[in-house]
Length: 207
Image (cartoon, rainbow, N blue to C red; front, top):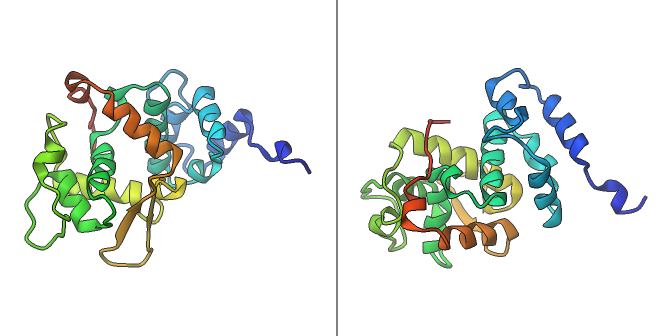
């Protein structure tokens, strides 16, 4: 069988979404809603395939991760700063600031939620470095949820290979995959944003 024959078509990707075990939830319905912010579009599908990424690895995640995956990729494809979730954005930005150091989960949460922690090793990163980009932030419980659904065992960053962690560790460390094409594209989009665009970034719910 040729390599081309193994490429997932857009129609097949939609079929995977429709067959999701939680297809009757508002999360999956939002992904299937044409024109919506969370919709999985042909442009997103083409972008992922163009980078050699199999969309199925994310489309089969738990429903909330599928929704957030679509939000993230949609914002990337359309270069729409305001459509990024700002906690998910803060996670990647914090990891970039850490340089060659890994960040443990408690450090990522502290930086994303902008809280002072006496135990989290933030590798010298200050809250002001991250806060300077944003006008607001989520509370700690929301940040913990979003760190989990992006970098956790079933997180969409983890599934796509944007971040790596060791499953099973209570306070596991994460590694940013700097060579990943979506990581590079994310930072390209973010670094080209104006202050006004960054302050329009969304953070509408705790999922």
